[in-house]
Length: 225
Image 1 (cartoon, rainbow, N blue to C red):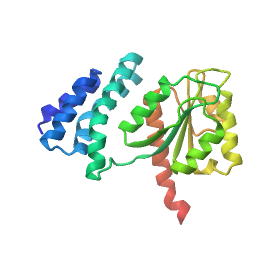
Image 2 (cartoon, rainbow, N blue to C red):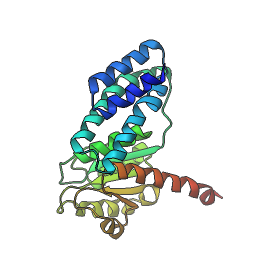
Image 3 (cartoon, one colour):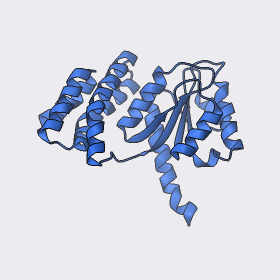
Image 4 (cartoon, rainbow, N blue to C red):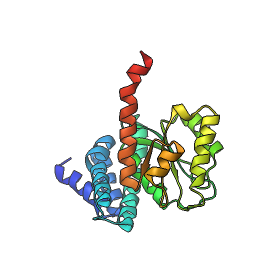
C-alpha cells in the first residue's frame, strides 16, 4: 500500500468524509493491507491532526464532529477485520466515560471517546445521566484505569463531587485516575473535588489521559517493590 493511500486515509478524516474513509478502508481490506497498519498509519494521524487543530482553535466543533463520524465509518469496516485476525491495537489504557446524573448532554463526551479510541484507549461509554454507583460497577467490570465525567450544567457538575465520594466510599478511588470536563468545569473545581485532572476540550482530555497513564506506569515499579 502506497504512502499516497495512507495520506488519502488521513485526509478523509481531516475533511470529515465518512463515505471516502469507509471506501478507503474497504479497499485496504481487499488489497490485503493489515487493518492495524491502516489504523495506525492512515486514520489515526488524521484524527490526531484534527485534535491538535481543534485545540488551537483552527478547527471548530462541527469540523470535529464530522471527523469523528469519518473515523467511526472507517472503524466500522476495520474493527471486524481486526477481530477476525485476532489483532488488537496497542492499548493505552481502559477508560470509562459518562455524563453525570441529571445531565443528558453528550456531544463533548462522545468526541472525547472518539479521540481516546483513536489514540489507542479502550473506551466504555456509559452514556448520560450516570450515577456514582454505575461508574463504580463499570470500574469493577472493565478493570478501568481512568474515568471521565462530563457535566454541562452548573447544577449537575456537583454530581462530579458526589461520584468521587462514592468511589472513595466503595474503596475504588485509589484504583482509577479521575478526569473531569464540561462547560462550567475548571481546574480549580477539579482540585477542589479531588479529581486527578481537568480537560477543557476533547484534545486536552486525550493529552491528560496519556499523561496520567504515563505517570501511573512510572510509579508502578516503586509501588510493587
